View (cartoon, rainbow, N blue to C red):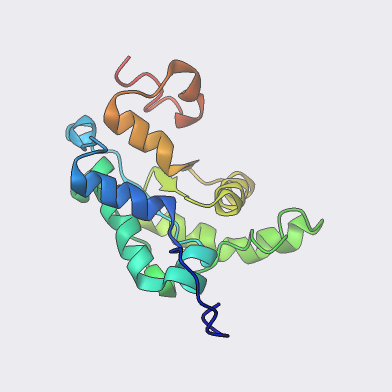
Length: 178
């Protein structure tokens, strides 16, 4: 629509932008107190479609605002490079379903090494393809991190994460707050 100057009456947004807005407005009551003493380290994956291809650095910054708000700025470790310069995980564009797992994992080794260099115990991946790819390369190459969706940690930060939703947090966080 931008390319052909087609008029429209809607705005393209992401749930992450809405999370940020709702946090700032006080509608989404989250905080990082749960992680003050635990000091669990988190990093975040910048998904290609919403960061590098669409909303660019504004989206990367908003993602970091949300993540730092729910885990604590002192417990956030950014990847290098990050934001619009972050590396693709290698799982999108049909790669996960494409039937070439060895090639996908070989490409994903770049992301694996990047994640491992952060020392973070958890990777927050807002994109399902990124989540699956980063989790898979972690298992394949022997990573010691877990991959989570942003809403899981957000629910933990609000004190509403259900018992049945905790299993994939791993032993370090699965029982926290129960």
